[in-house]
Image (cartoon, rainbow, N blue to C red; front, top):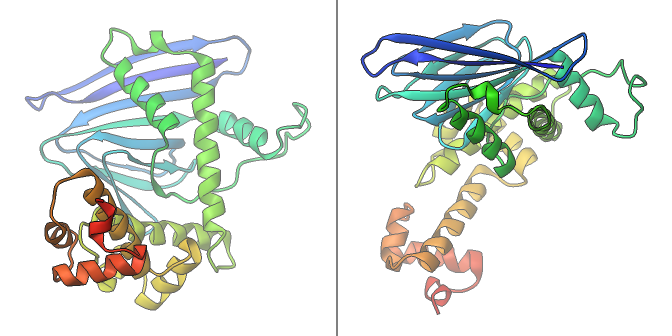
Length: 305
């Protein structure tokens, strides 16, 4: 069976605290697994948890910052982070106009079962009982459509009288499996990094991912100093790790991102070539045209023909 807990809490528009809780049990059996869905809304909120459950955290409105193991990660829009069980972290709402969070917490037994299913899909139940999930790196990532849709559905359920009444055990377990599979993908990503200890690779993966986040969130190319500060790495260490993780240097990655943005703007907007180059941070229209020609082999004007 799966024991569900839905919690909605936070602050009203006037700043008064509120909290509602709904509980429901799905299926049968003697030992219930647990899934908790938390939807919070507040202008100011800070929490520290030293013994959290495996969970995903998302900010569908506003922004929040998550801190763990010396790194800070910003959540907003379609970005989310998956945390390990018993991983200490801090979470702070940073949008003073108000932030909404949606978190799904999963009990250890469900995570272990999903992991065993992923690690050995041909195993007979009970044969792989010793298998347990490894520690996953806590990377901020853009949610794939299937996870984004499921979390949006859970969020929308809080608009009703009883969100737990809409719950389907099969859909919840499918979401748990996708979360564990995503975390496993993050673990494979971390294994590309040149470090002996798995714990070091997890930490470095989160830091180098932060540098990529900053590049993708910036309209102009961030400096190497900015990327190094954001990722808490030296510039030499950042360049080496970034190339190991993504196959190119930070500057090359930023250039590729700008070129893809330039092509999209040329194809989808009436902006002039000069205006696009300026919007993307190039020092002159000619510098933009040269960069575009080097990347695509044709001038920007050819994209619109």
